[in-house]
Image: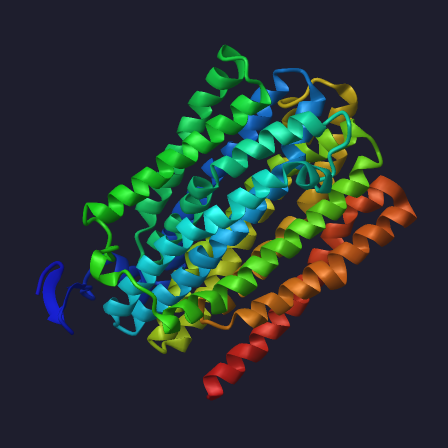
Length: 464
């Protein structure tokens, strides 16, 4: 049979996914290194455009020549991270189960999982937005805003909260598309939203005179465009899975599977957010310009961060599909290829940061002190890049195969046992220089733990 064939099963009209579909071929049969490149590179490329959401805001806010507005955009970043964490329940939990269902040749359950994801994003965004807006002032205080940044942080944060459905939907729906192998559609959606943000930022910030509020509005509008594109892909029949009326409803077994992977992943994001809050509050003791410099550095670092996250995200459907098909040998080959390719890319990025750090910081601020501190911060932060790709792939392997507690264990070791204690200790011993070198030391130790844990897990899995 050619193409997609309509069949009847249990009284429900479904689309049977044929094994000769190119998306399925890549996950099931393509050479491991090529499969990693085909699934990972487009996602990483798309995520680079997502970096522009922050970099473009930072660039145009920098043109206001107000470093306190720059600091406010950095202080608001944990709110965005929390949104991504909540949407990760669907984006990671749902995507993991969809890939496994497809590997096990169960399109009915895969479609029901997709519909559950749509419903959960709708209700989850409401539960996040309403309390956030009601408790805005204490929230902004918690973010570390002081008198000179409080108003700007409040403005930026409130608009992000108001658009939370589209921010969360952008992340989750893209993940769900990737889980079925529709990588290019997911990438196009991310790029569309970013291009819109780039075009709208100067309009709202300068032409309309909204300054930092305009940057937030442009970001939300970009997310709206991405979500509309994803909904069009699903509604036009271009995806392998389809959110239809017959799949609406609550299935406890599917809900448990989504939460099984999604909640630990979300807790990982919350722990990461907690670490950033500790870091921001410690950095705030060195003054607003230091916070601004650190914010610029973190936005530039997000370029390297999204590369390894994109490659790891690309590997996750590959792992889930082959785990569902019980093809463990292929899983090992995919893991090796993913780690090698990602590490090589990150080493190149690290060398670029080392050489161009002062010029990169100067793109966002003309303040000499900000440039000096930002250069020092970026050159310290870049030292994590040879290690974090491997750790991220290992964590995504566990999420893909439905064993998220192992991934969560890595996060506990990473954030609670290593990073936060190192932040406090290094800052006390060596001041700001110690503060910015805490993470490279932590990541070096964490990758050793992650690799040893994965080797043990794969051995146990193949024995059973």
